[in-house]
Image: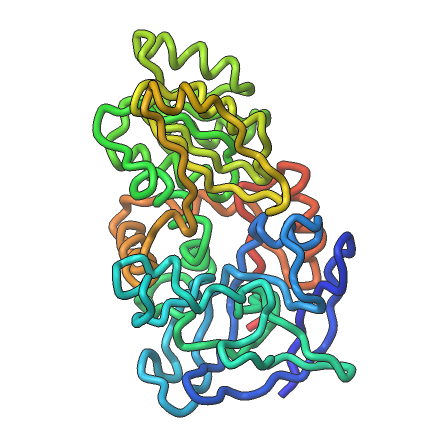
Length: 370
C-alpha cells in the first residue's frame, strides 16, 4: 500500500513529505493507522546530529492510532483496537523484561537504525529502504510495526491526547516518581520545562514533594510549570540554588532532575551542586554520545554520598504505566489536555519543530487526517 510520510535524508536537513510503499504485517506485526503523533525533542537530535540514525528514516516515535490489520501469531491486539505506541518495544522475555525493567528491553537496541527485529524494513521508495524512528515512524499516515511496540488503551479516551503517554509523560513522570524516588516532604529541582520536564513536575507533585523548584529561561514555561504543580520557578540555576538553600535550611535538594533538550556540563554541574548529602541527580535529557557531559568532584560524590544516574523512559514499564497514567487522566488526577500547546497537520511538521525550537510549545501534536 501507499502512505504519506515525513522523512529525513541527512543531518541538518528538514523533514520532506513523500509517498512511500508500505509492506503489510508479517508474523508478530500489526498495521496501524496513526491518528496523532507528538513532536518530541528526540527527533530533533536526529536532524542536529546528536543522535545520528541510519538515513533515510521516517521520523516520529510518539504515536497513537487504531489497529487495521494483524499478521500471523499476533495475540496482543486485534483490528479496531485503540493503541498508544511505546517507543521502547518490550518483548516480555529478555533479561530486562523478565526482571521488571522492560524499558531496557533488548529489542530497543536498534531503534535508531529503524529496522524491524528481523533486520528488515517495511517502508520503501525509490529503490531504497526507509527506516522508522524507534521502529514506529509515527510521522506517517500508516506504519507496520511490532506487536511489542503497542499498548492497548481504553477506547473512550481521545487518542490525540493519549498520544502524549507514549513518551513524554511517562518519561517525565517516572524521572521524578521512579528514577528519582521523590517522596513526601522532599525538595526536587527540575531543569528544563518541555514535554518531559513538565511531567516531571506532575510526577514530583503527585509523589508529595514539599518543594518543586523549576529552572527554565522562558517565562511561558515557568508560568505553565507553576500551574502544573511547581512551587517555585526561576530563569537561572543560580537563582534556584539560592532559593533551595533558603527552603531547606542549607541542607540542599533531595533530587535534581535534568530534563533539558540537550544536556551539557553546566546543567549537570548545577544539578550536582544543588543536591545535599545523599541527594540524587537524574539525567533524562540526551546529548551527543561522543560528548562527555558529566564532570563532577569525585571527592564530593564520595563524602556526600551523592548519586548520579541516567534513566530511559523514566524507568517506567510501558505496558503497565501507559495504561496507569491514562487512567489517572481519566480520573482527573493527571493533566494531559493542558500539555498540548498547538496542533499541526503532517504538512506543517517543520513549522511545528520550529515552534519547538523557538520555545513556543510545551508539546505540539500532529493530527493525522482521518
